Image 1 (cartoon, rainbow, N blue to C red):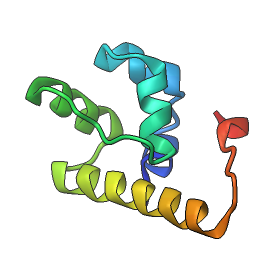
Image 2 (cartoon, one colour):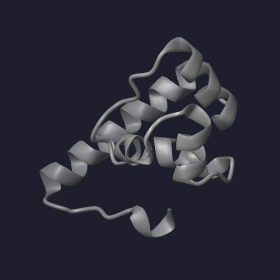
Image 3 (cartoon, helix red, strand yellow):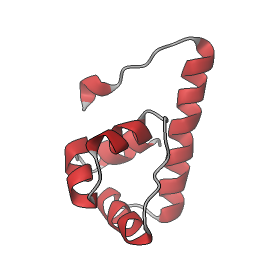
Image 4 (cartoon, helix red, strand yellow):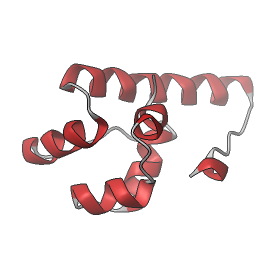
Length: 86
């Protein structure tokens, strides 16, 4: 499960996550597209895990999966626009 799937599983929008964690919405979108990984303080990681109803291990795995998907799309020449479902 990638970062976007993790968020959608709990029926949250990117703006909801950003607001509750106290970060920019673009950060959430960048995580989901595999451009960056979450670089948060431990208290914000705890909030994110609570929002996503997951463990830190699941969060880390989801971040890695998002990056892997982005690498596959980049290497295959595909340009993915997943913003339609946001």
